Every structure is written in C-alpha cells, then in structure tokens.
Image 1 (cartoon, rainbow, N blue to C red):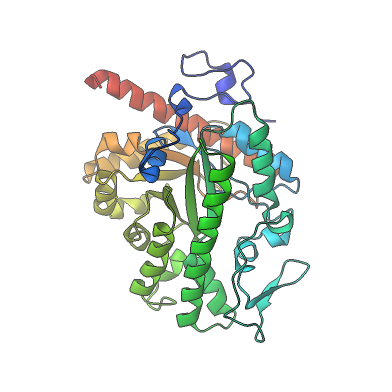
Image 2: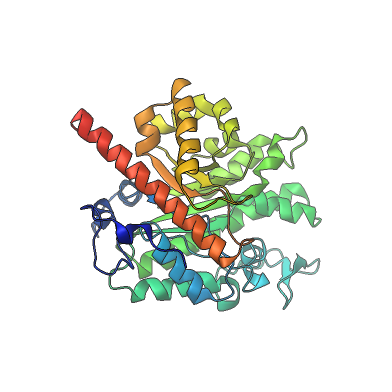
Length: 374
C-alpha cells in the first residue's frame, strides 16, 4: 500500500494524530448554514493546493474504493465510479438509464427501445447496482470522525451522452436535447443527495466530456452552438460550483464557453496555444484542475518529474500572458483521466502523486504570499 505523504510531515498545516484524515489548515473552513449565495460560499472553499480524482477507480469493492478516495485525497475526495464492480456503473449506462427510451439489460448493456414512451417521466433515483460507488462513499464519509469539508461528484456530460445516443441511432436534434435534459436532472439529483447528507461540505459537480474531441473535427456531431447550449445548460442547472473535464485534445474553447467554475485539462504542450483563453478564465476567478499525473503510461515513484513538467508549462503560459500567481493560487491537481483501467495499486499511486503535487502547489503559493506580504 502507498503511504500517505502527509503522515511524515511535521509542518503546522497538518492536523490529526492518525493521518487517516489529515488536512491542510485551510481545509477546515465550514460553510455558514444560512449563506445567501450558496454557490459563492462553496466556491470560496475551493482553495489552492487541493488534490482530487477524476472519478473512476478499478475496484470491485465499493467500500474499498470509498476508503481510498477519502484517505488519499481527503481535502477534496472524488465520489468513485466503479465500472469494474458493475457494468451498470459504466459512464454511459449509469446515467442513460434514466431515459424511458433507453433499455438496460441485466448485464449492464443498454440499447434504445423503439416502443418506449418518450413522454414518460425520467427516473433520477440512485440504486446500489448503478451507483454503488457513490452510496458506499456516503456511508464511509458519514462514518468519519470529521466529515469531508469538500466533496467532488461527477456526471457524464451532455455531449458525451448525446454522442452515445446518436451513435445508437437517435436523431441528433433529439439526442442532444434529451442528453441535456438528462444531465440537468442528474445534476440536481446529485446536488440534493449530497447537500442533504453533508450540509456543511462544499460540493463541486463535474461534467465529464471525453466526446469533446469530436468537436475538433470538420464535421462535429452537432454544430458548436447546439453543443455549447447543451453544456452551458448543465452548468447553469445547479447551485454549486461546476467543472468540465476535457479529456486529452478535446475542444477546450467549447468547454470554457459553457461557463464552468473549474476546467479540467491534461498537462500537455498543446495547452500553450490556448493561453489567451486560459488567461481570461483565470482573470474571471476560474479554477483549473491540472491533470498532472499521466494515466496513459508508467509514472514512476517520484513526483519530481511531474512537478517539473507542470512548472515548465506554467512558466510558458505565464510568458504568453497568464498571471503566474493566479495559475498557482487557482490550481487543483488531478490524474489526467479516470483510473478504472489501472490496477488498484497503480490507482493508489496516481492519487498519492496528485496529492504530493498539490502539497507543492500549496507550499509555493503560501511562500509567494508571504513574500509579497499577503
């Protein structure tokens, strides 16, 4: 098992004796129960130097997955999605199941049902078969001596679900409208579920959009305006901060235009071409979740080369117009993508490295603020 990096640190921002749920000093902030601007209060709790996961983990045991997320990234644990536990928890089946025109077999495969009534109500209930990771996370988090002060949940985004529906034969003009309706409903259901159970925790909901790569082609599934409306309606449907995870070389401009509070990007040289857009996003107080731990190759034992790559990218973005302090003080660290395809020890290593990098971000921001007298 990978050891927790915080357990061997003696600095004053680490609390607790056991190390099981230690946090930075800044992570102890609790939201006032009568806060009038709920989204702003939740957003204010998302401070620099946080680490989190993308969502998917390779566990068949939901309790073990929840324990790992809470132990390795306690400042912002990500609700696990566990397709290895059940195909019903696959990133498509898990959410498409709410549509009456989608039929899900016992083995978790789904298909369009031509005989379904499209006017039937959508079913946004959570059950153990499709949401076992989420339900186990809630049980494990509630059992902690101190519940998480922040939680990250995620839903597959409307563009990815819309593409899945069109690929299965649904007309595009219907598919993306239904996908947007679907994601808005699930987003609201997740917000209710977590705010009822963890009213003092800052919640952020990400929309996972691997299909954004299809909008870089000359013939995207639907035009950019339709896609932008679908994604922006998802971001606007809930009252807590939202994020969009852009996988690989996905259309970053489309994701930014949707108005998320956080944009998740993989650390890669191609981001330099988007420096002006990222600079505007940072100036508007947007957070960037840097996918700084690669998930497509071995990452080794040390965070040092990953930190070097991240800082080099930040320096180049700063040279091209981004505010260097904002880059660091508005940074979250994640693996580049989900970890469902990895071994359990590899997944644990990836989260450990993400947290090591987040600690370095926190230290650097704190040192800079001391230097300038902040």
